[in-house]
Length: 64
Image 1 (cartoon, one colour):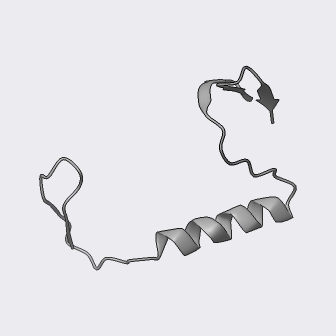
Image 2 (tube, helix red, strand yellow):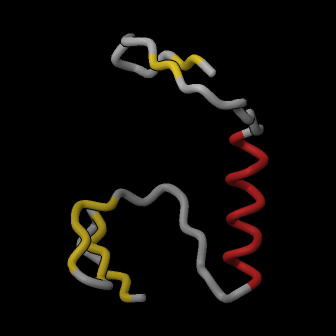
Image 3 (cartoon, rainbow, N blue to C red):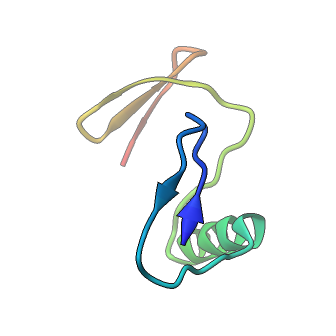
């Protein structure tokens, strides 16, 4: 398998690769997390993570 990362330097690996649809994969992870009680937020900016606390740009905090 040969990949070219954002740095532009090609990387080669001696094994078969696997390609997945990243959008569908991420959507499935969101649905699975929500099924187990996670809250999914959009339009929020994280400015810091301290332990199990997330600080958002608007000053609010989320603890998990």
